[in-house]
Picture 1 (cartoon, rainbow, N blue to C red):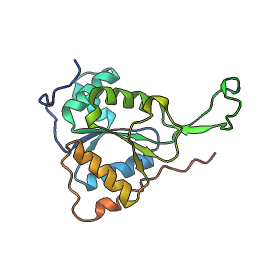
Picture 2 (tube, rainbow, N blue to C red; picture 1 turned 120 degrees about the vertical axis):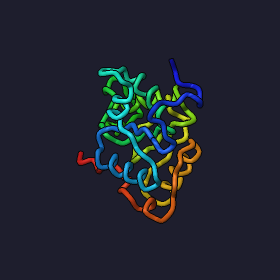
Picture 3 (tube, one colour; picture 1 turned 60 degrees about the vertical axis):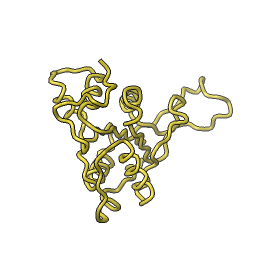
Picture 4 (cartoon, rainbow, N blue to C red; picture 1 turned 180 degrees about the vertical axis):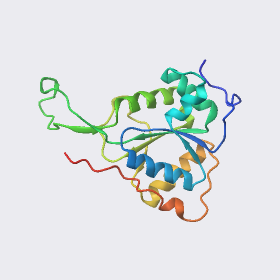
Length: 185
């Protein structure tokens, strides 16, 4: 059953809980978690939600359904984790891009599932330069740069999603380097 009702809550629910979907950039993930904690939120990882399902091997959709019962919002961190390119025979003749960066495929799939389940409580956060995705065209992202404006934008989206954020003091303006790890190739 898809969780659609705002009244249906799980045993672990809190307006401070935020489910974070992320890829392989662990430094960026840690920085995002640090930022979320600085604004009084409790970021949860995939494995933490897996345990809340009560199943040893749940399907990804079951994990996301459980997440939305127990969290107020979902933050999808789209980071430039992988190099991708079209095979030469499939490229347009005018296409000069040999390789582009994109998030891990599982992050894109989970982002799509989260948007389908709870688009009003899912926040897409883009860090760095990424290949565009036609199915996500037109969706508003938070472009994470680490500056005060992007942090304030993310904070505003979390408030809009109903999270119990607190931005007292200035730690939230500086906690965590919210820029993707530089690609070496």
